[in-house]
Length: 275
Image 1: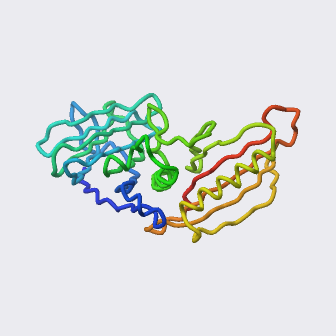
Image 2: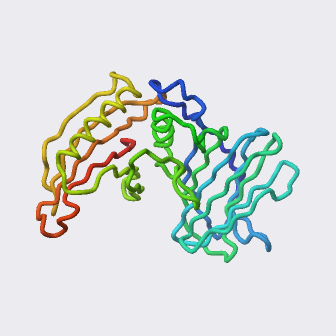
Image 3: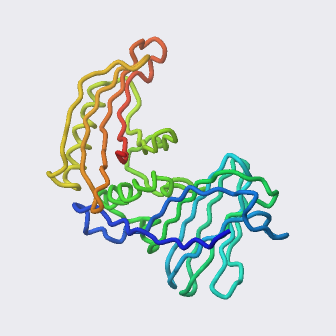
């Protein structure tokens, strides 16, 4: 196995939310593979290694996913001592986080202790503590900036085993769509279309006040999708490295209201990066 040096690309905060630059972080996404020809040790099994330059005080959050083996994350400090070791869960998912105590060249190992082989997906994020956690006093615009700053990482860093890191007032629930990597915030569920439309107007005004008038708004009329009708308003903009971002204001109406007479209408915000 040859040594791989990870060079991070700085992911800046949004142009129109640049006052919240504390949400900036370095990000890299890698598709790797454990192969039978990789290096082997009795303690780690077969492994890949990555050299990462890190600095004292930096926060790190590394995510790894594979469907082909049970992964182990090992982070080793510049002196060769194991700083953290994380074994993947039953879903072949591993998350390693921490604060770097000293500057230098660190080493991240992805290992398969059972010597199974296969492809894996590795996301590495490095930045200040404020890039990964919001203060309890965060304003609405700061929360919005925090969510949008995490678009390039497919919003995977917005939650952990303790739950979501962002809460909007009045939010009913939230989820991450694993198919397209979009982040959904459900703000209304009921049977009052007027209430849903009122919330849409209110949230559109609040969000445009944060991102600015240069974001482009497009309205889509009602569209039939299976048992539902959808109406979207799409707000589009870019970040400093020209990633295309969208905020979708969506109202959904159940066609056959007899199926669930108490929840025929919903309003949600959908955050996504456009590839």
